[in-house]
Length: 304
Ligand SMILES: [Zn+2]
Image 1 (cartoon, rainbow, N blue to C red):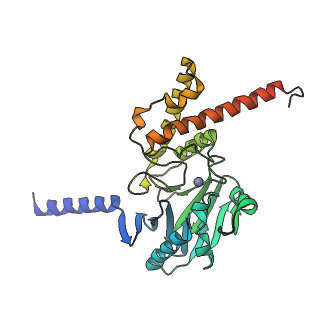
Image 2: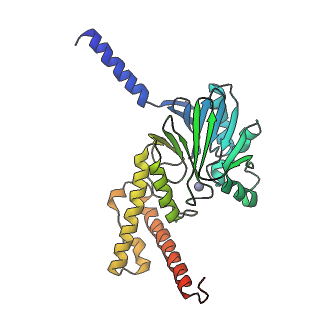
Image 3: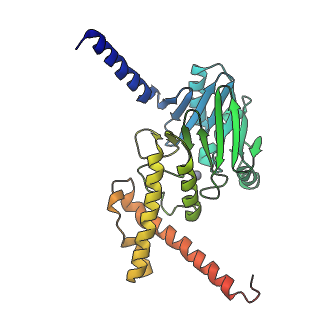
């Protein structure tokens, strides 16, 4: 091979590696990945992940998790830029995702959330969660910060309240909280999930144009995945529904159905053994609630 070819190949390999390799740094228990230019995923000793975006007009944090996590993330952001953190976005109302907001708010950041999250926190939030300074309504809000465009997509009633997915359309990076947990079943009896709502949210995610996603929870070694993880989550729910239908058709007693189903294609996902019967029970419970409410409508003498 000619030297010039060798070096041009070397450069190509280096360029490809640079594109695919995530900048990875470890400070104590903290890990930061550069997902795209100025876009980072952050993990502390907590198992939830945040995203932050640094621009030349300030930074934005998505899901500050808790105080300890937020303070660690703040130190990392301070080591990268002198720009202030202008916004802290709450992806939904769950405290374990957002109680670190106060760390940034005390330094002048404004907390942002969908109006549903804001209303819920006003009624039920505890004082560990900083209130929402600015809320948005509808299904899409677009922010412009420095060179970055940041879209907030409301996912509808699906998990928690006010569930929002963040999309950076130019970088084609998404931040997805709790709607998808790559290589892992949904947690236990899927408390605070609506199956129908989740199915709708997954369709909305599949319609978004992104290449990489930062997942708030994952069974993988790092939080960066891609749209295939969303497709797998949808396929998992579809496979469960079909398996439940088959058991009903075969006349399997209702109580036995959660323990009669195997989905070998998902057997390597985390918590498969422990959570599969619980996920099935959740789907069956939601279906039976729908049947009961339909019956009530039919039987209601006033036709309500
Ligand atoms: Zn949640």
